[in-house]
Length: 198
Ligand SMILES: Cc1cc2nc3c(=O)[nH]c(=O)nc-3n(C[C@H](O)[C@H](O)[C@H](O)COP(=O)(O)O)c2cc1C
Image (cartoon, rainbow, N blue to C red; front, side, top):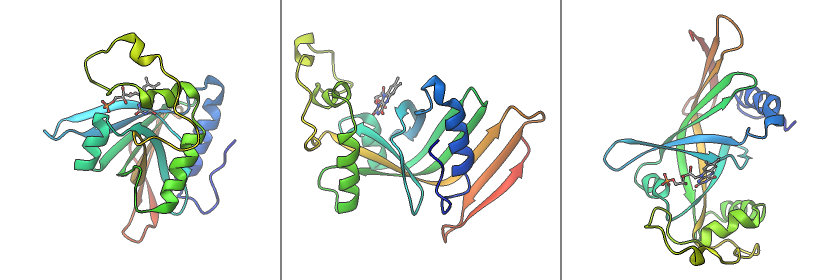
């Protein structure tokens, strides 16, 4: 089990437990990422959780810079992640702010993290970043029959989405009555937890 570091935010421990309980299904890394379109309507999609960054606690996802979600994040970095673990019947809703890490980002450490995540991707995921524009009119199948970009360095189309949480709403359906805890981070980065009605 990947345990939360002892210095981590208090919601990391219940999240680590839920992910571990879910392990055998192999679906513990899929979650939904909601963003806001320029016209104010919500957009939501499934993404793969790619790990944590520490101090402060942040969550990583990978995306294509040409995708709508990235354009939406550049206009409005407000996001909510939603994670449901059917085995333990727990939901985590993570509200926060996203930063997009693309080639040329000024933070060198974040670019190293981008390289590391790219290195961990399989060829069948890497090749998607060389496919034609996501969301464009369907192109000839031959256009997709190309080799995956090398592991050595990520292409410009590859970016990380780094989510810094501000509020985590943890709902547990197994206990009856259900339990719900809200974790909130203050301006100094200190987390407080409140038990609320489910
Ligand atoms: C199981 C699953 C995992 C996915 N993982 C990712 C991912 O990690 N990153 C990503 O950008 N899209 C991922 N997708 C595709 C997105 O859900 C979405 O269709 C695509 O990114 C286009 O979204 P957008 O137009 O809102 O940007 C995944 C889809 C599924 C069904």
